[in-house]
Image (cartoon, rainbow, N blue to C red):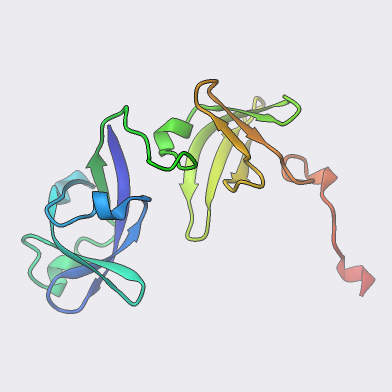
Length: 181
C-alpha cells in the first residue's frame, strides 16, 4: 500500500537541496537517507534520499542525482510516496494512517449518524476529516481530540462531539455581531 509522506517545496541553496512539507508522524523512518520513494507525478521518480537535515525548523532533503538548484526546483510540489505494509499501524495508538480513516462511519456521542469519512485533508495547523453526509453534502470536522474523541477501527466508526454549529449552522453560538458595537 502507498502512503504520501511528504511534498517537496522550494529549492534551498545551490547544491540541490529541497524543503519538504512532512506528511508523516514518522519522518525519521520514512524520510531517512537511503529511502527510495515513489513520486506523484510518477515521471519524476523514484527518488532516493541521499541526505537529510533540519535547518531553521524545516526538513531539508537532498536526493541522489539532483546536483543543483535547477534540478531541485524542477521537483517542486512533487509528492513523495512510501510503500508500506497494509497491516502496519502507527506505534502511537492515537495516530492513524489516512487509509484507516477513509470510509469510517461518523456518529455523534448519542449515536446519530452524520455520514462517512471520504477524505483526510492535511492543513498546516491541523487535519480535517471530510465527511460526506447522506444527502450528498460535505462537512469538515477538525481532527482534534476535543471534537473526535474516539476512533474505533474494529467497529469502523468515528465518534464525534461537535460544538454547536459545526453540523448545523442554525445552531451556531454567535459571540457578537457588528450591529452590537
